[in-house]
Amino acid sequence: MLKDITLGQFFPGRTVVHRLDPRTKLLLLVVYIVALFLAKSFFSYGLVLIFLVGVTLLGRIPFKSMTKGLKPMLIFIIFTAVLNLFYTKGGKLLLDWWIFEIWSDGLETAFFMVLRIMMLVCGTFLLTYTTSPIALTDGLERLLSPLKKLRVPVHELAMMMSIALRFIPTLIEETDKIISAQKARGADFETGSLIRRAKALIPILVPLFVSAFRRADELATAMECRCYHGGEGRTRLKVLRFASIDLIAFFVGGVLLAGVIVLRHFGL
Figure (cartoon, rainbow, N blue to C red):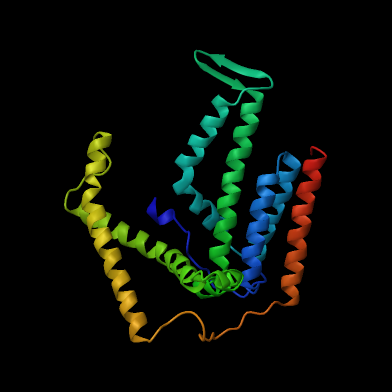
């Protein structure tokens, strides 16, 4: 299950999506999320799904990687679907058994909620799959640069977010190694009561926290040895510039958002 978590991974490439400015991809992600939450019908969700599939194909991201990243969230998705299925009343009564009632509105809400969560996660994955951590840091810093006038440490915030995303796969790999080592020593994480399983996680959490703090200390030492300092006066190897392909991407994103708004207005 841990190996299925793909958030934070980067797949190098020279596709159209990879060559987009990171600021463009960040803004398009915001537009995509807004359009996704404005969608209310099959037509509007279909429009957003076409956009998601099109970007995935252009970025040459394997659909297997997308579906693999959804596996760790399966329990949360099922839980959300069950809540919306049984607690949303309205429409036509489809099932009435004991204390359980399933209405047509509940079924529709559960379906759209599951679809929204899955598409939201996949869209977020596309950002990290096609954008390197360095480019993501630069894009975040440039977008948040107006906050510098309010003395907000923009560079430090962007760097922390980028490092956090970068080290997610590393910590997952470290956790998997610790679990394998504990199982080799006879540890059991799959049987027993819920309290016993929770106690069995202690031999995993302690070395994981120690390893995480050690890596953080090593990273800080390495940055200090290289005389790293953020903020003003720092130069970049690659200067971000918008190109014609970014304008086309903004136009497509605007068409997507406008299409969803129009479909919502007409109840489609």
